[in-house]
Image 1 (spheres, one colour):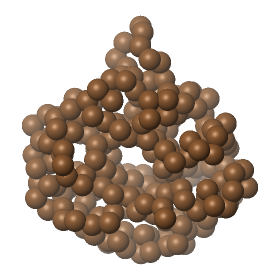
Image 2 (cartoon, rainbow, N blue to C red; image 1 turned 30 degrees about the horizontal axis):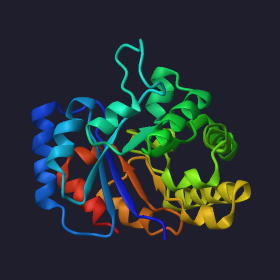
Image 3 (cartoon, rainbow, N blue to C red; image 1 turned 45 degrees about the vertical axis):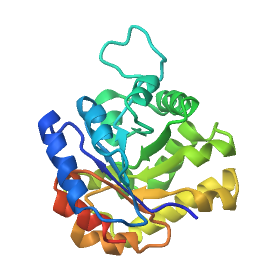
Length: 249
């Protein structure tokens, strides 16, 4: 049975002190649940957050990584470096990485391979722009992003893949895809995987929704059959909101 997951992407927010305070508050408020909870602090707080959360039900993810093992890549971080500070999960392909840093499907395929070689689980992000949605091209865009970056993988690798559908037009805008729109796309994604691999594999892949999830809409979004949780942005920086989203299951 696939996992229910709520992951908080802190993006470029919270210095070391702020991160420690947020982790402490989260530990106080989070109670036992069947939902897996993940936080993705900035690189500077990965070690401290990992140490603070040892023995808890909350795990730590990185927001990005490089595909190379090492070398002259100033400012980059490798999979081995993440493993060295206790990180077992990485977010790849976030729309902001694609838009601001020019990350392509081909580059992301290399990053996915590097993560999996180090047994690091991947939360793989993808989604359409507003123009794609208005033109009715959203399914083709989503299908292409998944195929180009992930469909070279053997079926066994998918045990380490979590998908995160993020309609770009609904990130940080206050706009949210309706629960029905989210369900329709998640169902399409699952069928796309089934067509390539098998319906059994597709049924086991967790697909998260990312796009202005709030306590007010989380319960309805998470109630949809093919929505297995959320990749949360701004609301993850507020412990009360983030905890309410977790509890929406």
